[in-house]
Length: 257
Image (cartoon, rainbow, N blue to C red; front, top):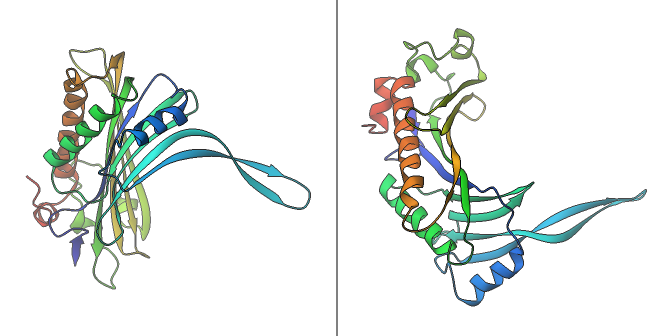
């Protein structure tokens, strides 16, 4: 009765996010340089991101586009579905770089594509990284009219779940940990939101692993390894989490190894 969203795995999307300590200066100029030099041609859509301001009057509300705060690239499959996107955007006092994959095949392909995009980006926009995050969203379908039997989906021998959650019709269970990483001055935060929705007949697992560097890292092709090590740790942590919270039967459905 329980089916993963994909025939081979349960991954709906994967995101890698780099947080920089500086704002993107003159994003319009950077975008124009990328566009004029035919950068990122694997993406069919290449567009600036405009901040929007609300102008509220007595009679109506006007939405006005103001300054450019970044740009986005998006790739689509032959059915018009977005499968990859790269967004570079100023948020408050820093620039956030987000790569999102919605058609996941395997880890090596994901990390190779992410590295390729980042190495290409620094040719136009050299930057530092102060933190990096990896976020998985897994999704399962309950193919039955009956209420989702969470005790068959989740293994509670480690005490992750409250009995109230396991008996709920719709519910959310959150697991949060914050630690310093051994043998380094880096900081790690790991957050998991486990959601059940009997109206949609879905089970969602969102796992986010953030590494904050003690010293900002200057990104180049030569030192990309430091980012990759953090992403590999996050990838391993995700698999470890699934092994701990899913029953063996559920693990077999997604060929977890």
